[in-house]
Image 1 (tube, rainbow, N blue to C red):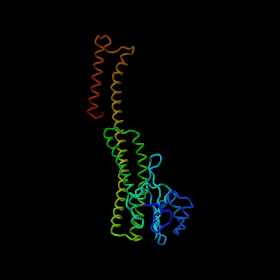
Image 2: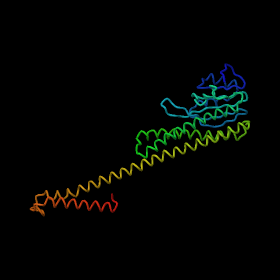
Image 3: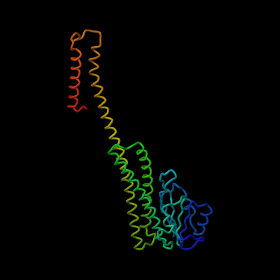
Image 4: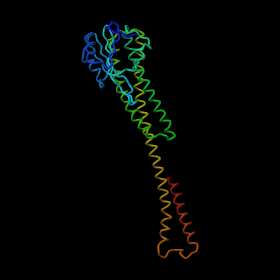
Length: 296
């Protein structure tokens, strides 16, 4: 893989955040539809497949880490023409670095193989990010058993949930576009290419299922933590209720005997012990009845 200064048959032309002049130059060189290249620079563009004569315009979305550390997806246009393959993106595509740097063997003259390798790299990146997210969720689930989950974990869950939903909203249309591309006989595939296509489809399906499973796991952890919190609160309320009732019974008797009226045993020298003993006995009976009825 080497960089060239002129257009050449069998080359890979990559436009990254191109200027209007650069887009116009490539459009004129390969007689492309300008609107399709302009759509590729729209960050909200959805994955789709467009066929214009013998030209194929495949829009996919790739994942990229933002400056704030969160992940987002952006469109990538892959144009398949007779003499070259063209990629257009408004952002740097990290997934293509191994190809452009020559770390992955690739021949740009084998356009179908190059297209498959580009799609494979994008899909592998999704799979890696989804697996990384799965490990984060698994760590929180393990801490949930010891009730060591913090509010920060649930703040992270909000971010993870958003990322997974964005991955899912990109992977599903990506998958639909790929199936349409490879099932419509728009490209000539060799036996080796068919194996890559099958692996690509399988990896896409697996990534989609992993995203759905992780979203379900997040919902499950939230529900489990909510149930545990509610149960802990109920137990605390029961303890406080029992403590309040156990204090209310003695206070009732002590309040009666603190009044300036005639009361039983007021002249008995054992009055204090009789009152305290009766109060303790009554409280104990109340407590045992509550345990027997499973009130607390």
